Length: 467
Image 1 (cartoon, rainbow, N blue to C red):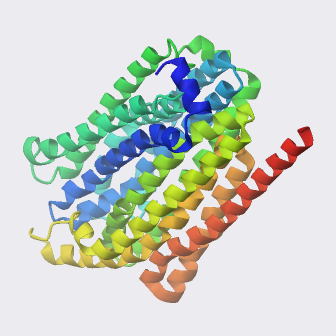
Image 2 (cartoon, helix red, strand yellow; image 1 turned 90 degrees about the horizontal axis):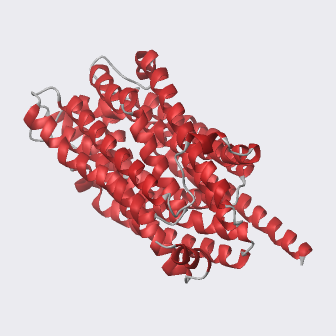
Image 3 (tube, helix red, strand yellow; image 1 turned 60 degrees about the horizontal axis):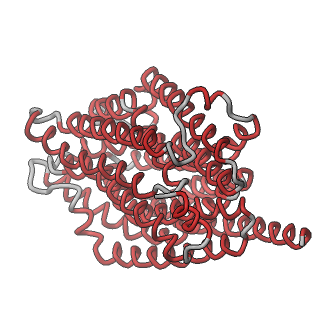
C-alpha cells in the first residue's frame, strides 16, 4: 500500500469500506488463529481421553497470558504509532515500533524463565490433578517456556503492521501460522509420535507454527519499513523520547491488564470448577474454546477500528472518529446476537466436535459433553456484552486514555466477574458458577459505556472551547 493510499484509508475513504479494509483481514486471521487454538483441543479430543482435554484446560491460562504481553507492546506501541502518524511524526513512530519489538523480546524471556522456575506450583494453582499434571507440563514446556519469544513477536508484529495500514500482511502472517499448526497437529499426534504422546505432539506443532509465523512477520516488518513508519533498529529503539516511552506503557499496561485479569479470572474459574471433578473441568475448557468464535470476530472488528480511531483522534477529526465508533458498534452487536442464536441452537453438536465418544472412555466423554452443552447455552448469553466491553476498551486505548482503560479492566474482572463466581456458585452450584460470566460482563459493559461516554463528552467540550 502506497503512502497516498494509506492517507486515503485513514482520512477520506468511506467508513464501511475503510473499516472493512482493516477489519476483514483481521477477522480472518483471528478466526484462523481461533481454529489453531482450538484445534489442539479438537485433536486431543479424538483420543476420547477427558484427562488430556482437562490438562489443556489447566495449561491454557499460562499460554494465554502471552496475550497480555502482546497487548502491552502491540496495542500500547501500535496505537501510539497510529497517533504519531496522525500528528505527522513518522520518525518518532519508527522509534516507538523498534522500542516495542525489543521490549517484547525482553518480556518474553522473563516470562519463560518465571514459568520454568515455578511450573508445578503454577499448575497446582490452576487445578491440575495427578491425572492431568503430566500432560499439562508437556504442553506448557513447549508452548510457553520454549515458545514464548516467537509467539509474542508474531503478535506484536501483527499489531504494528495493522496500525500503519498493513492489515492484510499482518493477517497473512498470523493466518499462515494457524494453518501450519492445523496441518502439523495430526502429523505429530497420530503419525510420528506413539499413543499417549498426543498432548506433546499438539504442543510441538504449535511451537513450530509460531516460529514460522514469527519469521514471516519479522521479514515483512523489515520489508515494509522502507516506506512505513516501522523499524527494528536497536539504535532507534534506544532513541525513543521519554514521553513516547510513557505513551507506550500508559495504554499498553491497561491493555495487558485486561487479558491478564481475564486469565486470573479463569484461574479462579478452573479452581472452583475442579472442585466438581475433572469432567466438569474438561467441559468448561471445551466451552471456553468454542465461545472464542464471537470473541475472535468482535476483537477483529475492534482491532480494525483502532488504527483509524487513533489516527483521526490525533489529527483532530472528531466527526470521522465518532462515525467509526458508531458503525463498528452496530456491526459487532449484530454479529454477537447471531452467535448467541447459533450456540443456543447448535450447542450439543459443537461440543461433540471437541471430544470423541468412540474410545475406551466413552462414558466419561458423554458426561463431559453433557456438561459442556449445558454450560455453553448459559455462557453464550454474555456475547453481546462482551463485545461492548471490547469496543469501549479499544476506543479508549485508541485515544490514549490509559487511565479509564485500566479502571475498566480492574472493575470488570475483580469487582464484577470474580465476586459473581463465588456468589452464584454458592447460590446455585455449578450452573451458577457458569452464569457468573453473563452477570459480570453485563455489569462490566454498563460501566465501560459510561466511561467511554464521559471521555467523548470531555473531548466535545474541549473542541467547543477551542472553537
